Length: 186
Image (cartoon, rainbow, N blue to C red):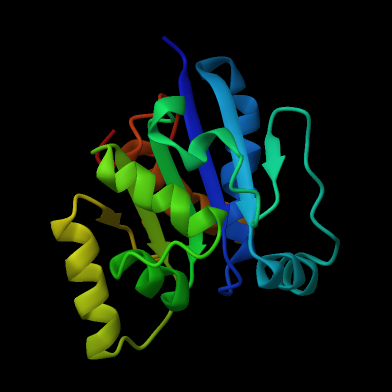
């Protein structure tokens, strides 16, 4: 059975993480029935500032407006199995932790948690306040996974994309997506 996943992109700095994830998922598209994208307004602005061009949806993804509560993954009956929010702002994380479903991204995260499916939040902020840490704890206790956007250096990345891929590869592993990546000790 092919997988159905949701990619959420918030306005936290780190659009390159979302881009590298989308590039990798495009290359792995044969593993998926559906890949849905939902972005905050700020995510579109940050994408343009950090990556130098406007976001463009490719044919491998279904794009949904952040206010479209008729999107299939706004309900558990659509059976999307994984949601990755990359990068995940602390504001979005707070709304998820407190159950505030005020847009499609937070509604989808709420659905994923209530259905006991896989929610991965790639937190991109530093330093962390106690409020952030408590929200991370709440989401973890609810079954979500917090994966900070902390790149690794042991694979000797040479470009920003390779550096971002060290985080994205961890996310793909957490999502149980079959892919090739640098593996320690291999």
